Length: 400
Image (cartoon, rainbow, N blue to C red; front, side):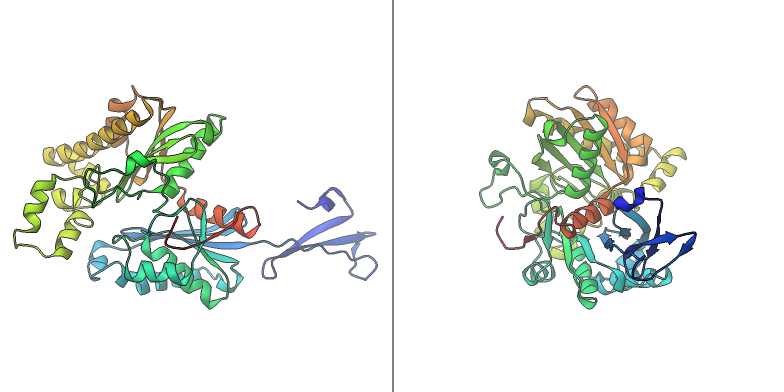
């Protein structure tokens, strides 16, 4: 804050296009800009565009420093998504949708200081910021570890930022890996466990719960269940995410099948009925609620239940049941020493789901419902810390 705010002889004038605040001295009731009475101090404001591609939507937010000045959810109906063979093919459609909404809101992208995208399925990275570089782009375009909408975050951010000559970043990627060594053993040497989770929102919500408890995140143990189009769970011990249950290891979700019996999965793969892409879609995109109930919308499922659909109730409760099992599984890693269980993500707005989960797990620790997500805020605030010199962005390589 300007020290001159304390001086009643000054008034502040904001120039949004030129990105600074100037102070004008008042001289006997009149504004004067003569060289002897005019003083100006530039306070650079930074505008950051945050982009979070999800399975059926692209969420964006625009921040001027820490003030959110625009927030939009660009929905992509399943009929539109199904026109594209791969996530990568959706790049142009999603980028154009973002630029169009910014134009409609009369925002000039040349005012941006940086663009940040949700980090995708890269090889293991550390928490925090990474500048988008050619190596990262090549990996996400041509050889991502798995198909995921978040892979588009860095690509779209880079493309928008490049055209206006500002930096692009990712922050707290899906691939943040702080697993303890024992957690990497899978039971099959050829397939070590990897850390893929909703790290960005999970860490942000754990920080907020710690703040509500008036404690430091690094002094507490949390289990965080992120319930969205995909579901992942993570264990945070004293500031590190030491174990996770990824969306292919645990609960099924609105569009993902989660953990399925391996022997039967192998039989299905070699049955001759399906090719590799179709099987991948069964696991991610057309699994879970979509496979059982032909919808990925939890609100529609709850409507079915209220109308007396017993099959819908059984499947929906099974999803909550599996989340509860996952929470119990992670609690054993820290010998039950859990300070709080955090349930977050879009589906956490559902009292039906959260009540089913609470009933099964609140014996472990208090359950905190943090519905929705703070992913865009976390992306923007992390980028602002980099721009303000409070944090350094790493250079992406293929090593931690």
